[in-house]
Image (cartoon, rainbow, N blue to C red; front, side, top):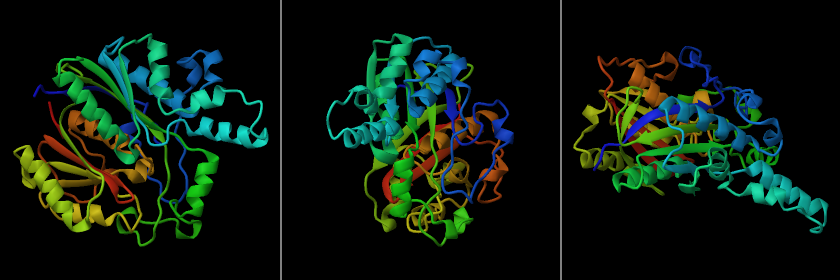
Length: 353
């Protein structure tokens, strides 16, 4: 297998993560039901005439992808692969509202055309005039991981040398109302709460877009080697530790070889037990968490991958992410473990370059 490197990383999130000093200014949040992304000034990146027709997720992705390509020094990638859980849900809502308001008659197709999940990858390709492989994965919380797997295969099969991989999800008012009703989002009376010791169900919902350039060649800017990925749709709680052990064994590692593990504690007492179970395995690792910085959403793992890249490159762990106080002389390997509500479990292994 050819080594695959993450040669750039860009993220728009509820933190000011496009700012060079974001690492020192991370602000946790545990008292708001919904967190909004810190958006850039889009007219600096996208022609004003186009901005009007773009949904939030397309705008965030366009800018994040531009940052990622620029950092990697790539003008046109050999493939564009995007993972999203909800796609362009703002335009989906607008289209459905038009259907109802117009009694299913005299509808313009614009919102429908722009509401499809592959709009993001398509718009990025249009902007770059890129006619290469273009694919979108819609696999709830493992959408980014499937995108990484595809990119890895493209590079290993010699189909591509540099692949733009991204993840993106936006919020919409109606969906947030429904999430409040079905208790996906925490009730007001349960706020604030402790992410690591929550006794109530529900999460704080976030949004964002994370983009990476994966390449077969290591560069001066390389953040990490993307060593391996594993995904499981369903997992019983008592299978968690074995799931992780088998993944590490496949890569000739044990839990003692992992310098840091980033867990997706979301504050949902019902599903966070998986992370608690996993945490018990890693007695000699730095234990970290991140959803108090990003909120929970389908592709929140993009934020954790972004953070892991910076931790490996800077050899520094932000105190706000720490669960324990264990210090490592050198951070060589980071394991990312994520799921959404107890489904779609994913493991990503990153190594220092």
